[in-house]
Every structure is written in C-alpha cells, then in structure tokens.
Length: 153
Image (cartoon, rainbow, N blue to C red):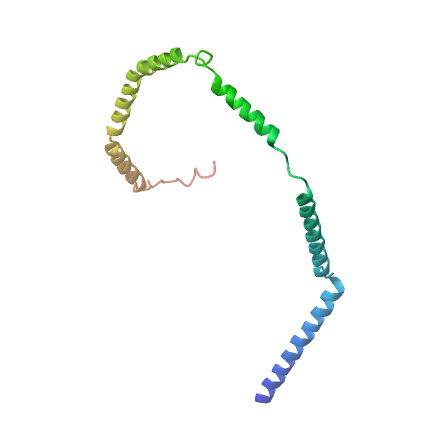
C-alpha cells in the first residue's frame, strides 16, 4: 500500500512539473513580454520630463512691474473718489426696510400655521388604519359552492 501511494505521489509531482514546463513553453510562444517596452517608455518619459523642466527653468523671469504699477494707480484713483461720486443707496435701504416691515405679519402667520401643523396628532387615525389592516389580513376566506353542471359554461 505504501509503495502504491509513493508511486502516485511521484506521478503527481511529475505531472505538476510537466504542466509547469508546458505552461512556460505556451506562454513564451503565444504571449509577448512587454516589460522591456514598459521600462523603455518609462525612461523616455522621464527624459522628456527632465528636458521640459530644464526648458522651463531656462525661461527668463516674467516682469510684473508694469502690471503692479497699473494696479497701484487704479487703487489710488479709487481711494481718491469723493463721496459725491459714490452712489446713494439710502433710498434702496429705505425700500428694503419697508418691504421687511410689510412681510412681518405674513411671517408671523406662517409661524402660527407651522405650530398648528406640528401640534396635530395622527395617532388615532393610524391606530384605526392598523385595526382595519389586521381585520383584512385575518378575514376568513368564504367557502364557495360550485354546482357540477355549471362548471365550464
């Protein structure tokens, strides 16, 4: 019995080794190894990026002095405006205050209605619906008597 198990074990190891060799042969024959292409493309990408960063570093600094001067001049002109040139918003503010006062009763009424809706309780209605549902679920099936002569007509 031990010799038989040893033979079977040897044959299983031999079959596994042959299967591994066959798989190696199959994959080498039918599939292309792309690791070399991948490493080559990575090297190309890093060379391109390094060159791009070097070209960016070689560019001259941007002169922002004219833009800064224009912004400073504009800021000075805005601060130099007197109050007579600025728009008078007193009328707009007065009108907004009037609208706010006109809407106050409406807001008060809405708050009262919201409180009334929250105070309304639906528990009795829900209890009645629950009893109706339980009655419908527990309703016995009526027995129907079918005469022999009327079936199929």
